[in-house]
Length: 296
Picture (tube, rainbow, N blue to C red):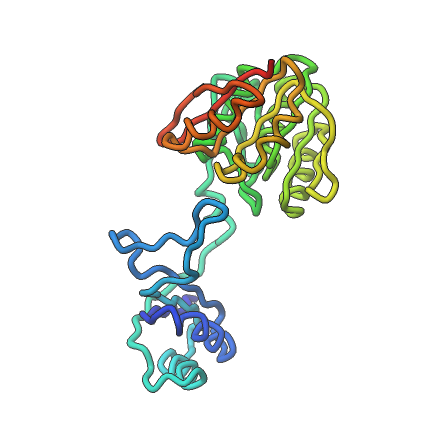
């Protein structure tokens, strides 16, 4: 069996109403893409927190999935009429063969080697090195699967700086990968905090899967106290705003690592944090940096 994948071009004003009308008319799914993706006219939708991007794309492509026997022309015509378009959009049809979608998705995620002794392994894979520190982590709703350069930078920094029984706070924990790694590397008390309750739920589930004990909380139940090691892998805008709160969790003599920072943002962040503790570039990967320092 194969489904019909129907795509057509429209503008930002009609893309979302057409998707809604297609679903009402019987489409199985409908999504909107940037028709200029991969060209100099591509429009980013997500930037730094606090930045303003216009929602949607000036040149939009709608892709909708239809039943094998659906009349694509009639369905698109009904959707266009429902929102007051005078003409049915010009469309193309591709056939989508039936597949084992779970298996196909899983095949895109292989184990990631972070270092000689640290691996990130999806739950459906065997570990390439059973003797290593293997973090069992599946792609999910929370940020942090180990594939992004900033996550790798923080994991490598933790491996160099976590000592036996030290206390660790993962500020903006996402999936919990950094807190879990710290616990597996020998840390004692480990905690994580995130503004997203879904991320906190994911972190708790991941900690349980990895057999580690860690306290995860959202911003409604803030984590208190000072820690030997604090790591924050978030973007530069929240790092600016949260500097006093983050630094307050670092004990005297404790260490702080920050990432989610582009090369050109590093000096500004170093300057902001200088009133609490000195930071320097600890490592660089691609266009991202990890800043680290000790609190006097």
